[in-house]
Image 1 (cartoon, one colour):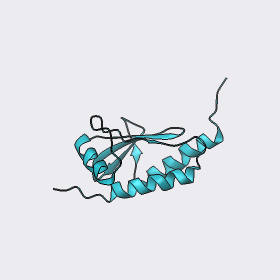
Image 2: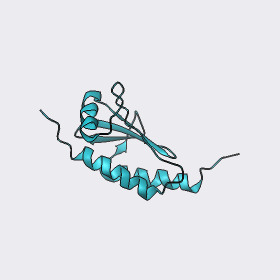
Image 3: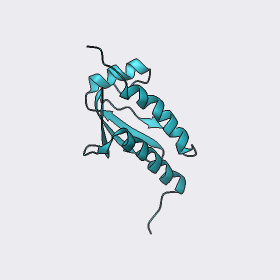
Image 4: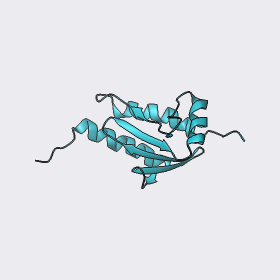
Length: 110
């Protein structure tokens, strides 16, 4: 028996993945996607109700996330986003857009 994801979860994955690909994410090898950012390479995977991300350069990831008030794991560089299963994917993208606009426009201090 093949179990299908509920439509809401499928929609979540589709909408959030489209958001990241529009930002420039491309297929990755470590996670499903990779995105070049001012804080270095960010690896991304989209799941049914959450997004897993991890900075390649943990120090740069820490510097960025400290500057925006949403800290990543200081040892692994993981910067994950968890959402409720009933949340509208468009609201999820609005939230992600807030954080990723900060990230993509961040200027590291020299």
